[in-house]
Structures are given as C-alpha cells and as structure tokens.
Image (tube, rainbow over all chains, first blue to last red; front, side, top):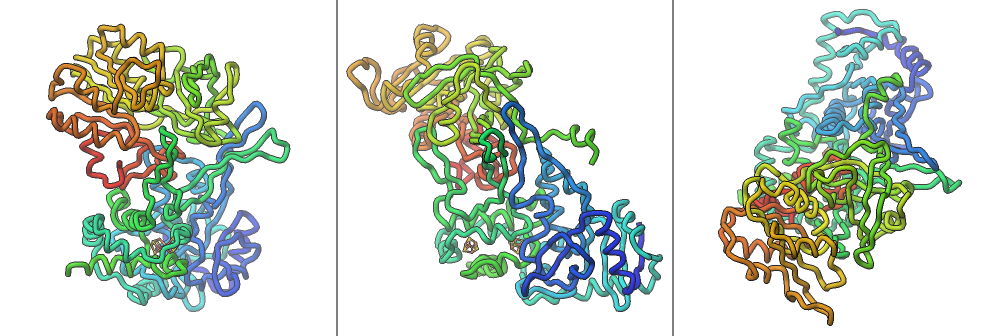
Length: 344
Length: 280
Ligand code: SF4
Ligand code: SF4
Ligand code: FES
C-alpha cells in the first residue's frame, strides 16, 4: 500500500487497459448531468463531475435484481458477481457504500449484495466540482470514508493513486505508474483538503446534537406537518439517496408461464403503501398512513436511528435529495436547521 | 468469485421446499396446512417465530408457525385468503409443495415464561401463532405454573381449531375460556369482547406472564385489564404484525421506529414497544 503517480498523458491508456480487462463503471456525462455507467472507453470518463444523479450503490444493489429463479421443478439463486472496477467515487459516496456494506452484512449477510461488492474494486477520486446542494463538508465528520481500495487525486500534469488494499495495488499493473514523490503526495493531500469548507449549504450542528433534537421532536406534530407540507409521497428523496436500501420483492413469470424469477426492486419509505399490511382481520392497516409520518421516518433514519451502528448519521451530505425533490422540501439542511431552531 | 465460494454463501432469499401432508378448512377463508421439509430436515424453531411462505411466481408472506417444535416430524401454518399470494397458497393441496424460508424472527422468550403462571389472550387469527406456544406449554406442562387461555372471535363461524378447543375445554391442564363478539343460533357460550373473559376466572397472580396476539384494537383494552391486575409491562408479550417482506432485516418494510419487526420481533415485551410511537 502506498502512493503511485501517473503522468496525465498515460491516464487514458491506463483506463483503457482496465476496460479491456474488466467491467469498468465510472461517472459519464448525460446531457447536463452525470451518471454512473459502464465505460466503453477512457474518454467517456468524467472525473470532473460534481455529483451523479444516482449514487454508485446501483453497482451492488441494482434497481431491479433477480434473487431467485424458478423452473417447473427447481429453484436456484442467481448470485453472479462480475469483476468490476468502480472508478471515480467522491468521498461522501465512499461513506455511503461503506454504510450499505455494513447494513447488508449485519445480522444476516445478504450475498446478493455482498458478492458483487467483494468483486468490485472501488477507486475514490478527489472532488473537482461541487454540486450546488452538497453539504458533505459539514455533516457526519466523525464517519471516516473507508472501504475503498484506492484513492485517485488529479494534480496538474498527472495524478496520485493511493493504494489501500491488495485490490487497489493490483491496479498499478494496468498503467505506467511510478512511485509518487513526497511533494506529489503533499500536493494530493492539499488538493483534497482544499475542497472542504467550499459547499454552499452548511449544517451548523454536531451529529449528536442533531440526533438528540430530532429524536426529541418526534411528537412535535405541528413541526412535522409544516416541514412535510407539500410532500406528494413520490419517494424520489429515497431513490437518489446513497444510504437508502429498502426494497420490495415481486415474482414474475417468463413468457412460457413455466419459469420465472423473484426480483427485488428499490422501494421508498416515503411512498403511501410502504408500511401497509392486510391484517389478520382482513382490514388494511397502514402503520405510517400520513405523509408527515413517512417524512419524519426518513429523517429519523438519516439523523438518529442508525447512528450507533454506523458511527454517525446515515446522511453523507451528497445533496441529491435536495436536488431531486420537485417541491424542494427534502433538503436535510433545511429540515435539520428548522428542527434545531425550534425553541431556541 | 469461484463457484466454491459462491456456494459457501447462503442466499438468504432462497426458499426451501415444504410438502403438504395434510390440509383442513377451519373457516371459509382460512386454510390449515401440515407441512414437512422436502429434504427431511427438521425445522428447528421457537414458538412465536415466523416463516416466509410462498408459491413461486406469486410471492411470499410472513406466517407465524402454528404448531410447537415439541411435536416433531411436521409443522403447521394457517393462512387466511386476503391477497394474491395467500390465494395462491390456499389453492395448494396435499402432495403439492410450498416454498418456505425460516424460521425467522424473535419468538417467545421461553425462559421468562418457565416456572410462571401464563395467560394467553388471542383474538381472531391471533390464535394461530399462539397455538405454537399453547402446544409447547401443554407438552411440557410441569415446567409452567397455572395456564390460562382466552380466545375471542368475531362470530362462531370464525372460530379456529375446533378439535383443539374440544380438547382444551375438557382438559384440566389448561383454564380455557372463549367468547364471540356476535352469537348465532347455535352458540351457547360467552358473548362479548375478549376482556369479558377476565371475569370468568379466578383472580390472576400479578406475576403472571401474559401473551397477547390479535388485532391492534384489542391491545388497548386488554392492557387496561392487565394494568388493573397489577401485571408489569415487562411481563406482557405481544406478537405484532407488519408487512414483513424479506424477514431478514433488510427491506425496511417492517420497521417500527428503529426496530425491525422481523428480527427484533415479532414478539416484543409491551414495555419495549410502548416506547415506540409507531408500534400499535
Ligand atoms: S422527494 Fe420531496 S415530495 Fe417526493 S417524497 Fe421526498 S420529500 Fe416528498
Ligand atoms: S439524505 Fe439526501 S443528502 Fe443525505 S445522503 Fe441521502 S440523498 Fe444525500
Ligand atoms: S421484513 Fe424486511 S426488514 Fe423486516
């Protein structure tokens, strides 16, 4: 594990060599936005992205994933990991991946996620452009980005690759790397430090203070009514969130009506029927019937419920939910600040 | 990943085949199945635990085990026809198979029941998951103190487990009382909500352990009675229902505040859930 350096002129060849050997997924431009997609060539890679529409969780936890396939007689699992390099992940999304790693591993290991996760080399990259709604420099400072295999920092004239695991070290074989000099390592450090404090949105409270106050506000109906006003339960704030991982499971038949699959789909706790069940009595019971309760549940999850397990809040400050919410109410900075200001 | 490694990791969503040995239709909408794992493996469970039960191509639903692990060789479930999956399950007959995952979840804490008086209050289909505990206690009768069972249904046609009830009524091992909300011409028993049964028996010791399972509306009234009897809420166990999709603490559907019904429950102490605003 150490620091390597690659000249700018050799960078495309490195990425192309990776693409020739493995599936490489990275940020690419899509109209005026960025998305993670499998790369066909190095020039598709856009490490100058500010944020992607969907977080990289989709590499390990696809929006639709078969978990069981069945035929007339037999059934089988379909865990089929593909050797993948996920190239270009900002530190806040590295945190998000580390959180879903934990959550899919805890208590009962879910290898439908973990197998692809283990087959993936995660290469973090420095932030070259800042999304207007991001606040990753003022949330969950106690949660350190970890679990990635390498960290790539672009400098003038080249880039520094910090290798953190054997998977990360193995990348060196694909490009004309040399050891980085102390100056280059320092420059990389400075580049990464320099973006901190640059986000335009800011959360001015510690994670503990937020967790305590948000929990305490659980019964403040008036507050939640106001905060969630206009929410139309679309669930977009869940869909784009790197730490949301709820899913629904549905069976479907193939055209032959003999075989088919059991598939999990991303689900969203903000949607109306998420917690609805048909009770023993036959009546429908919705345990979070009002949109305010669903909105509150999301904030409890992002600021308080999971903190003990994750070592801090389950919000990385990516700002995707703020951008995705058409009525502009999902923004954690707005909501948390309003809660913190109650009674003060 | 090599095939070996892949095989070494259990897919928590892969169900196992269970053969239907016997079926019964206790009511118009419920079907009682007696099952056996197709691979011959015994199902190792605790009363109160659940299974995800399904038919491939339709889906899975969470169902509480309705028989006791003390009765080996097979296990029972009772499924009410309410939706697509339960309809598919209830169309299956002897010789067909169901696909099950489990046992899942946290069942009854038998250690805290042993040596104690136990009262079970079951409403409607809530008798099914508690039947597991009822059988368990009857099979190990000397490990428990006084044993009472209150069972209430909407009307006589909804009453489940006729044979069991005949046995319980006759048995000295169990102080059994039943009621219906609405009688019909055939009914000669007690009429009224389940709490009326508290007056049909001799005084309950405040140390009694109580298990409640039934529709949420029932909880409040039963708890009121138990409060009057001085029964501590740590000693009251409730069996909750949620939309348990995955049963393994991942999908998020069963969350009650920061708890997961499917792994922290479905059995909780009332003391634990009264802290949770979303529980009942
Ligand atoms: S994105 Fe906005 S409107 Fe949609 S569910 Fe979330 S908070 Fe509600
Ligand atoms: S809650 Fe919003 S800002 Fe926080 S991690 Fe999720 S999408 Fe990003
Ligand atoms: S049923 Fe999926 S988390 Fe409990």
